Image (cartoon, rainbow over all chains, first blue to last red; front, side, top):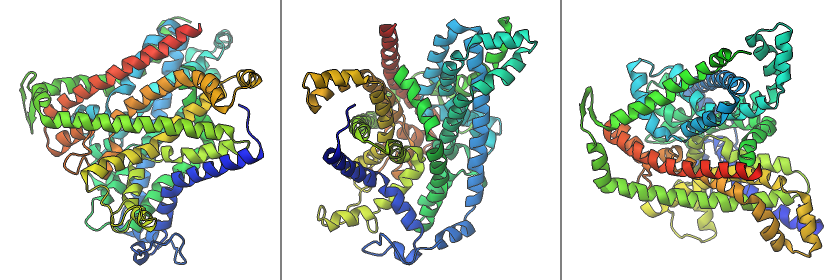
Length: 277
Length: 288
């Protein structure tokens, strides 16, 4: 589109920066509160910048609660889900594009259907099944669930990717004596790396940010993930807001940083599906 | 390569989805036909559905869901489109701005909701302080304590979280519009509004329908924000269907009733899903 110059740009930037300030203010307030000493948290008027900023709330949070454990749990579950989901999605997408090209559409429609199921509906039977299998309070219960959320989108995305890789490459590898698996792992997967990265990021984000499944499937505090640990602190009689915000920073900032760095991959992947149809 | 290898590649995902999606789904239907009390399970036919459909709580909850979803989605779309148009006009730093605006969407909804709990805290929250400083309100408002403001507050938080995603889709859509169309419009002497009306909007219409449908499907199922902020209260004012479902299953321990509510919610979602599939396919046919 034609972009206005000078005066027009100045007005646009003012509007954009005001909108940005409103959007990001909650995060500023999270950080600001997390750095305040307890007495100052309840000061009126509230302080927007403080001379007493320190990491005391972080220190007392880490002393009083197993936040490091929550963090590790989140990380294990998110990485586990990512690995499982990407592997399954890559196998399925390759299988469909190379062996059943005409089955791709019904397969994708079925995947879309699973993506639309209300998660609170599935939680009930999933909880009962995990309970019967004795898998409550295990990483597996969460890894299996989270992998399934990201899988439909991942397969859909990777089908597009594998289609763009010429089949002649498979055939050439085959003629060179590579087996089916060897072709898949050595020839095709490396070529699909951008797609795999995008799908991995997407899955990690879903798993890291998920809440209600972990809430239901973990009752033992040592198995809480970050989101559940944080929400659990809210329910307490006297909420330590600076510690709570410190926990929110610990949960949010690593993901924000990771995604700011790798945003392009993720954005391309997400918009590709919706824009291209 | 022989086809049988294909089954080998597809088997893992089929088995996996069977175990994690299809089996639980079937089990949910089964549960919805039973009364589950601790370890005893009795077949009751459609009694759970009858009870849900004759219960005011269900219809109230459906109403809350409709208000929550319609308001959130409408605001996501309007603000998301406005932001996309704005960012698309900037001459530099567009990627950096896009990343910055995307932040609320990248953070866990449960964590975002926790931050908002503190912002909206009646006595010490900064929102009340700011509103009093500019004399919008005179006394502190218990945002989540009053039925009227509680629903507005959770919608507000969902809007904050959901706008970036629509913005992202719309920005991508704007970038696919050929520059020649704008040049042609400019040659015809079209002003900014006319360019939007006759070039931008027709090009974005399909994407808007897709974004709306996806957003409705995601918003009507959403639990986390309300679960953390109000758990459905006060007095059921924010109890959308997913929250009713959760409360019935995991607070009241009535799994059969909850499963019936879930199946009814699924029917609502599927109606929208059908629209989505239809629209997405129509476009594919049009372009070939």
